[in-house]
Amino acid sequence: MTESLMADYHGRARAAHLLATIATVLDSVHQTRQWTDGREGMFAFTARFADQELQGVLREELSEDGHLTHVTLFLRPYRALRAAIAEMARRLEDSPAPQEM
Image (cartoon, rainbow, N blue to C red; front, side, top):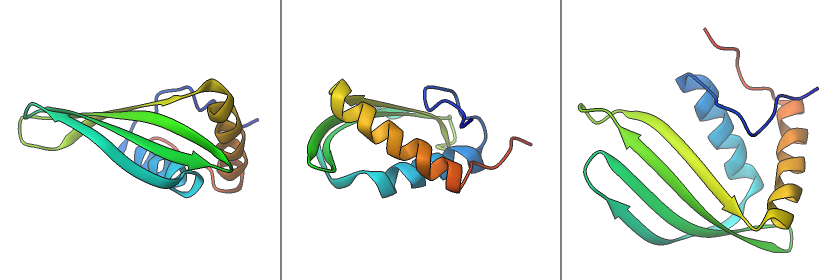
């Protein structure tokens, strides 16, 4: 069974793989707002999956030296998100995230 998408993904390789896979699932991503304060940023956007629109927020945290340390992705509405999650699960079965080191 595929690992849950509602989970923490630790490590650069696993997080990069997950974000790259998400980018293949969502279409027409358009940033609508941005808030930053130096070490934290939030980016609101719209995207499409199949014929459904999603709204999202990507939250990033940076270390003191500017390296990305934490990313959280929020998507809505649930109906469109549920369909996108099913597609993500299929793609992760075909190309699983690397194992943590």
